[in-house]
Image 1: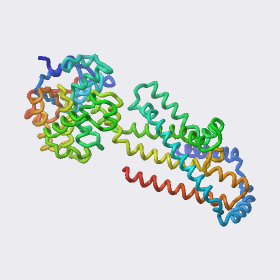
Image 2: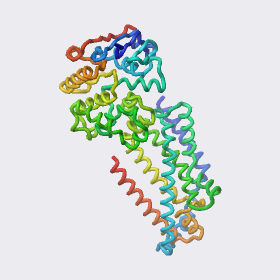
Image 3: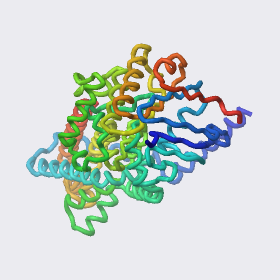
Image 4: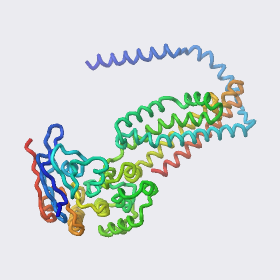
Amino acid sequence: MTASLRVRDLCKSYDGVRVLDRFSVDVEPGEFVALLGPSGTGKTTLLRCLARLADPDAGEIYVGSHAMHLLSGRALRVARHEIGFVFQQFNLVRRRSALENVLTGRLADVSLWRVIAGRFPEADCRAAFAALERVGLLDYAFQRADQLSGGQQQRVAIARAIVQRSHLMLADEPVASLDPAAAESVLALLRDIAREHRMGVLCSLHQPVLAERFADRICEMRPSPG
Amino acid sequence: MGALRFTAILLAVGAFYAFCIAFADVDLWRLWKGLPRLAAWTARAWPPNFEDFSTLLQRAAETIAMASLGTTIGALIAVPLCLFAAANTTPDAVLHVAARGLLNILRGIDSFVFALLFVAAVGLGPFAGVLGIALHSAGSVAKLWSESIETVERGPVEAATMSGAGRLKIITHALLPDVLPALASSMLYIWEFNLRASTVLGIVGAGGIGQELKSSIDLLDFPRVFAILLIVLAMVTFVDQVSAMVRRHLA
């Protein structure tokens, strides 16, 4: 069975400073891997390179059968569809409802005029409602995103990744701006969803306690020497 | 060193204004001599002459129509232009530079000048004014819009990018909702501006209340000039109020 994510010898420098130095990691389907390390160790850089929101200097990235490091244009877009990304700052569209934000995950398969008219296919809406129910926010479907609490917004972001039916979830410090209770419930949700959907999760954290409690495996990142 | 620099700056600014006064042919003596004439005209302007009120109203309506249509057409042209001109939505570096150049040209040429050209092309009347306003506004609106788009947070757009969707769908779904109030607000601002600008477009033959203004001044019919100025004032105030009201609702 192919891994959700396979990274080999990934390198990335910013202004001559080596942030990633031959970094490798594997994430299996259904596995929750925590990326642990103090800030400044390149966790965000790594995750952004994996999603190709930043371009690595060297190395190989395989997401399922997609060789992410080789792709560009349309092929890259297709491959990105396989990756759900959860951000520290949630990155919801403030003036859209929770439901509409979840539907962002279906954007690739919906025609442009439907997006402009705001009329998503019924099947997609059903999937979005189901995802909201799964993260416990069905009652907030029509609430505007900027009226939700931080924990709720992060759950909407997770629901967005669920409806995208991706095989890999990348989470960049998803609980760093949440209070302890919300942080725990968000991490528990990520872990459960990884198992239910056989989705690999690579999640950066800076608190060892949380990583030990929720992760199947911990991958430590150290400050690079140079 | 601070004092020396201060003196140098003072001298430079002083020289600049001396140059401006010389070239602008400023002569306070002539203003002083002209004052009695202005006073006499002002006195003769009372009471305002609202005779032929229906013509004036029709011209005022022409002006409002001209400004509104011109702004709308300009905004339609600005839609693609601003997406090309904003650094975070442009699909291509060459298009980005080209769009910036085009909008700067459009913005740099006043509606008045465009209208002058269009009067020659399509003849006298408000249609030339509509076209003139449309071209100039396209540049102004696109400039303001692209600036609003550039200040938007990139987070939601990145999140939508991860869905694997194309650029236009991402812009529509994840970028527009958050900037729409700002876009509408700047379009209303340009609309107000265009109404004030179009009150004088009649002077180059592009219709509207400016045409009445010019013919009345030419005939030294000051009571009528006064009446026209009152109508312009009422019109501008009205549009400013409407615009301010809509903007409050957008916030």
